Length: 345
Image 1 (cartoon, rainbow, N blue to C red):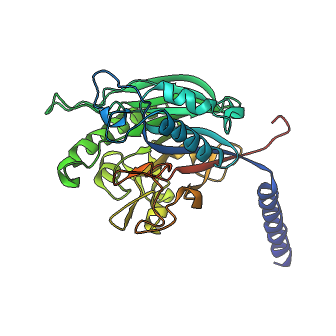
Image 2 (tube, rainbow, N blue to C red):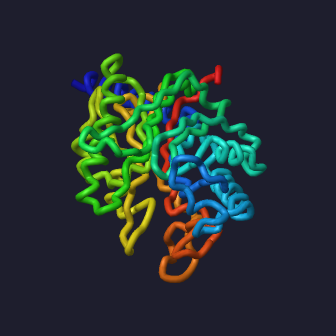
Image 3 (cartoon, helix red, strand yellow):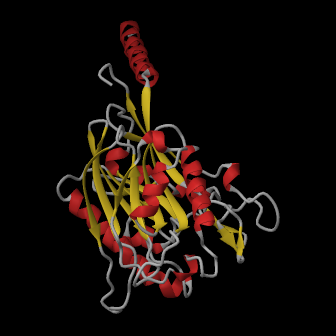
């Protein structure tokens, strides 16, 4: 009996030692983020879209000076994001030109961010896109998916952008979204977001059909919170990691939402519309492959209104007809992916 206890003790010690060695291994971090850049327009009217507000003669008097400030402000915000920013999904960008001006700004030019962008049929002329650091992410492909509503042939919104690439030797798919707004009321507009969620889920399912362990990141301004039916029922993004299996999705933002942390505020209520959802392949503790470590809302003080009724809210570009020279009405969100460092990398 004493010998059996001794053997078990040695086994337990070895198990703990192995665990400690795993924990002590250096981990590399890769940051994946999303940021709604809030009305990132140039100053030139784009034919066929309603962008008149953001022109020199429009209500915002959107001229060269304001546009130049907007570029510098957004570049500065990105420059302050954590080291290891690998990919940044963005929304509310008018065209590729504004993104080219952004990545050339001196505050982030050293990272040589590259752009994946496609024009959408949105009536306001805004699109989604992905910026990526080519030293950390090797692009392998991209494709857009268009949301249509059979019941409304005049409906126009942002395309969903699927980007594939390699991070540290592993294939990753990123689906960038900007789902239909709550204009007209949350309940009345809900079916549009449910349809957008169904489209995103179908894209994921097509990848899962090939490999249920495919590593997928669904991100965007979804204009819904984690608890809304678009996320829960149609995208099927689950609250807890323990609920997720192969071919399923985990909402990394749900825990933050439960704590009252939001990415935008309205009428003294915080919402977490800017979400990042990941597939089962990113879950677990085997850090020999890319794994999810944590999620954050990047709500640094410089991004916040400093005084007045809206103190603590995101510092916007315009509010109430006044130019605030701010950043965005949304805070960025991001997740940390980690992987063990090896002698080869």
